Amino acid sequence: MHQNFLVHGPDDAVGVAVRDISAGRGIRGRVMDGGGDLEVDVVSEVPLGHKIALRDIAAGERVIKYGVAIGKATQDIRTGEHVHVHNLKGERWA
Image (cartoon, rainbow, N blue to C red; front, top):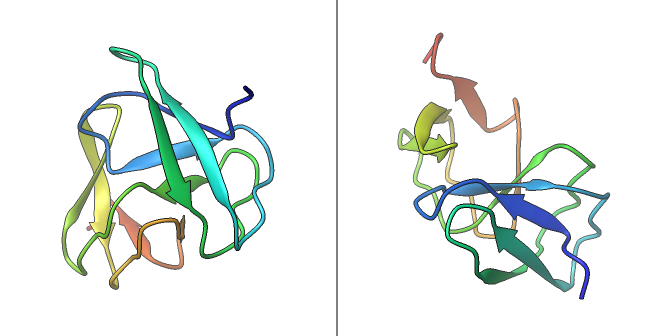
């Protein structure tokens, strides 16, 4: 079965889309470190190379990718939502 997103580490809050992902469907992804598949219901379109939330993330919470904080959520982010500059402020400027 093909994967729609990849997750770098088991503690990451986001995965990276390996193709354009349409809203309103369940998709599968793969955890690269340690293996295993994840399923997420997509609530907003996620373009290729962009991030998708793997769990609910509260406003102000640090977002983990590659096992490190990459920024803070500027608003609540739902599981399956597109994560990008509209709802994430980079760690350097957070």
